[in-house]
Length: 103
Ligand code: FES
Image 1 (cartoon, rainbow, N blue to C red):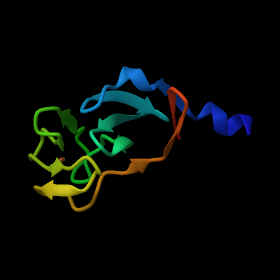
Image 2: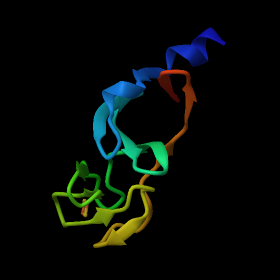
Image 3: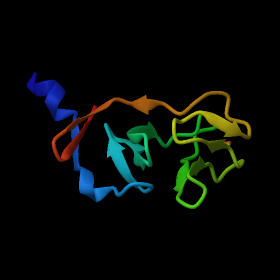
């Protein structure tokens, strides 16, 4: 439907090279689109599940790190270490040709 389409975000694949990430705003909330080597694209909420600080993609570590209490997540959004009680929220996406449609 048109209402559903309005909530989607379209990003060109070549905006996010393999091993890199791009911060996005999805439905008013900070999120990150990551191009995982071998595994492809994933979109995750940046809101830490501990106390809500914004996690940041760390390219050299290939992890997401929370600046507040050093919570660490892998590129699936799963908790690696620190206080976060649960994974980051995964935002659905699909690939169509050269574009990534998020939402
Ligand atoms: Fe992210 Fe505490 S708010 S680790």
